[in-house]
Amino acid sequence: MKKCQTEGCFNNAAKKRTYCNHCKNERYKNNDIYRYYYIKLKHNARRRGKEFTISLDYFKKFCCETEYIDKKGRTKVSLHIDRINENLGYIKGNLQVLENSKNVKKYIKWCGRDETGKDYFTTVINKPVVHDSSTPF
Image (tube, rainbow, N blue to C red):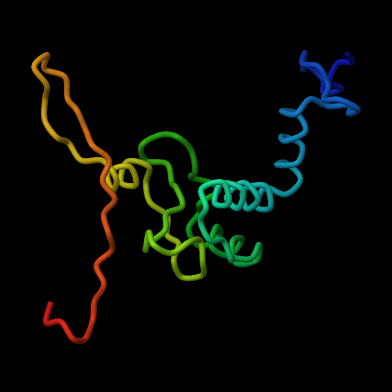
């Protein structure tokens, strides 16, 4: 096995390649960060069976307006891309950014404590409220 050509990397290169998969992805991300995260979002949507019709240009504009790329991450105040209407996929007008903690709270409901005093939670999908002109509310 031949070693990855990135300076300081000790991983083996991918088969028939000069770089390991990690370094290849890092190089790709550094060349066009918007395209990298667009493809990642598209892949995850496909994996989860969600519709994905936004274009790369729309994604770039969305990221610039919301500062998503600069503030994304894993901390509780980091930004995540969220779908406004959970029944729809990643389509124009259905995207928003939420802090990680707020995004998680949409799906988790505290149920109480068991006999050992340990908290337990359940996953809940909050269905969006559909406003209809035929209903008074």
